Image 1 (cartoon, rainbow, N blue to C red):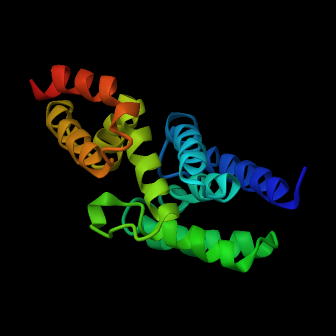
Image 2 (cartoon, helix red, strand yellow; image 1 turned 90 degrees about the vertical axis):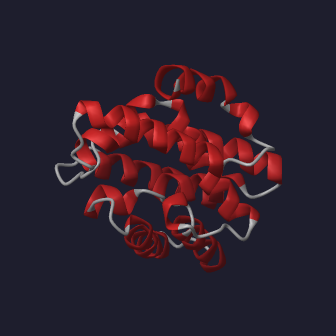
Length: 188
């Protein structure tokens, strides 16, 4: 196992422990979101010729700010947490900066445009993963945003449309069937 692979495993374990701790502000995130983001990030990294280990690290950490401090500004708190953790683990400084920039620009709602392939990969992996699991979007709507079940259908459809818009034409095929299912159920 390489040094970077060991760091990746340490990040995964740290993230898993944090997600299952009592301080988690985002219930169900580990299995219902992060695992899927990591899978998509690795696949996209291989397609784009970007370091897949670095992208998996970014994927494990992209919502850590939300887990520890809530959704508001979680891209900012997450980048700080990632910097501290990765520095402690002895990860390459240049790669830490790339991971931080990916985390800072992964939120489509912040209208921050990804400028590098690495930033694009994480933003798209996050959007793709959100379409993988309707439970994630309903969890955000019901638990994090305190919407009623009636309000949640409209909110989830809006989120699906926003996530769909964030995915490049190059990658829409990965979740086209899921998007169409959402459209049938919620968008009519």
